[in-house]
Length: 373
Length: 203
Image (tube, rainbow over all chains, first blue to last red; front, side, top):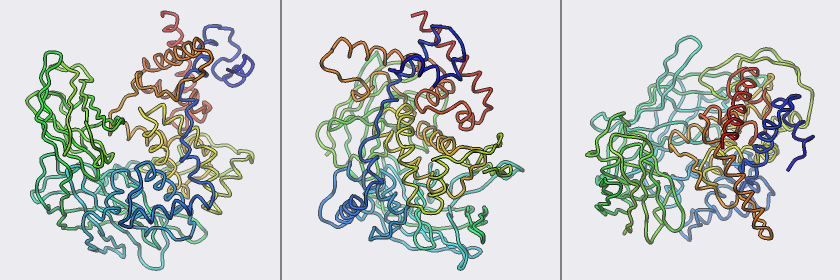
């Protein structure tokens, strides 16, 4: 613990010359007892930029992982993703994964798409004003729809990044963007799209992912037809004299895609649990390469939901495309997801549900125990 | 190095903020920034320099070590991607980096609606002195008390306390991160501490 002199020096902006003993003790208390201050980053994060030898070793492990030999444990994939991202972004220059595959590794829910060769390679291109967008790989399951793409600018021009975006509301001094739109055959929009996962440079092109909310826990189709509408591109062009400029490239870039649907592991517990005078039903659980989704009756969309399996606990949240009305009914079915891949977990799964806020109907907490075949 | 006042691209959340600018003397971080501009590999030094603080901040904003690690990675990946656009126009790199961190944490919170539950403080956050169980118990109680105080604050005030006491940012840096004036941040922190002091007295 720091002495008085050290604390007064460090927090002079808050303490000034005050002789308020209570205030001083509070500041000392916050300084020493906010536990996160002593939170050490895990060793693999610290080591991510250390030593060429470690990078080479991890790189070899990543290559082995992509070959149909053995899968590294999840933790190693996190290490690999971090190291790999830093290696590639630092331009280490030695043998690494193809850049397009690297971008899948940057997100915990999409790594298995390349490692297990899931989805479908499509390679459809559209060009507007010299800018070319190529949709290269598509994947869908109950939890996510993933579209891997590449963007390149006109030949002879250099860019630091090119991103796919949607429509803008461009009033002077203020812009609002939205992500590219994905719709099904009936025009229904999928939630998500979101911020770019990670722009990985591949030569003069940039690869990235668009991740949308999946087909839902009831999905049973083997493939789906979707339309991707990219309204605009956002480019950061490098000019002579090492200056830069923002560019907006008007599209649209339109893609009609047929996406295979990965089924995953499904459990239908149809379990009814009563707690706090209220019944809740765990209807269905789907775990896939990109995450896990549960559907529940009798709880609200703001419920606090967590899943424990093999000793680890994961928080679930409502999927992007699910509305959260201010008034809801216990007769509605609500879904909750986690993007953490759990498809390789076995044994007993425990789902705990609490109503996190005051609602019209209170009850719980509920605990469901089940296995996933 | 003094520069002219920056222009703002509103859609780019990592752009410099329209705040006072000043000439800043050369220091170690300036050297690191200069090196990183010349050689992308040098960004690793900036990563090492700021990782612990970013991780501590993320750990205060997320429920698990794994979430904090994942989000910390995202912060540095985004920072590396946007680094060519960063200019020291009176905005310290650490403030720019924490602005990214704050956005990443806020986005993650919106997606997960996770709250930091007091009953999931990991064992690693508590002291582990097995030779003095009484001291260990007291220390745990102090840590829990600090976190209880924090949890009673509204999110924006809790954020200020986190940035000051966990991330160790100066008032000026906090102002640049949250987009308010330094005097406003100073005032709000002062009021928040007074509230915490009153709550502590009432217990």
